[in-house]
Length: 344
Figure 1 (cartoon, one colour):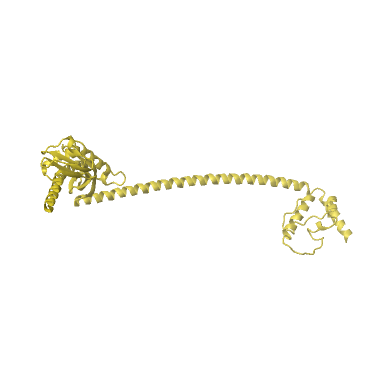
Figure 2: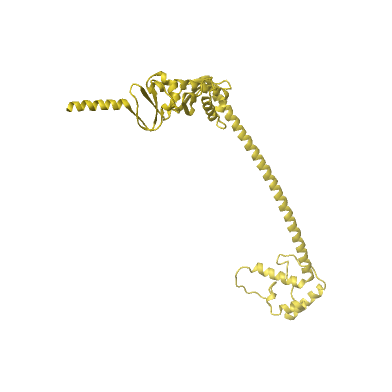
């Protein structure tokens, strides 16, 4: 009895294995009946499914992106330069039914289908690389306006078009979706490398000369502007100084006329100026009021000044200009001598 149960269990497990299959979240499945597949044969929902043994066959494809790198290919640019280019692409199975119909005849396993698809993708990618012939070498490698990204877009467009490149079908006809197409490396033969280095030297020299010329031009412009500003400021300063000088001369002439009209006041102001200059520092001095410039400290100085009897300042002894003689000066001197005799 126990042996029979083991046999039944083994048969059940074998039948379950033969009649069921599991689709994962990252997979899609194509179920064929007697080797034929239709629109209803594609299973995209994950889970456990049933099949008829020996009648139906299940082929599962991974929906995740796959990486494919092409071998190095020698291409010619628009300016007749030879370059060695390495390209790559990432792709995934977008339409499992078309993919199975195109590559299902290459074998019974999914790996056989992938291998056949990669062979087709290699050919398509080499055909798409022909777009490189529309670009010059400096356009692909230039630092200012590099068009490498545009070349990769053109290659992607060639893979998506059914009439592009070498006339091969678009990848969508194979149930394949290209995710990324890019150039991973660009190298040069020895002759091309030498030409590239020479062109780079010429290009960098040209850029340096342009920068130097622009700098010299800007420096000359700044220098001329500074000279013009300096001349304008100097002219303004000279004009302002002339105006101030003229105003000073005019005011000085006015003061001179006023001093000539009031000689007693002029004497008084001159004596005050002498005191400010001679005794500016703090000091204790004892002088006679008869000394030049000190008679202003006499109690009757104001009265004598009003009567015209104040002694004039000896401007020659003070190092100043002698005041101009006034009308009646001889009479004033006589009065001064009389006053001195009276004091004696």
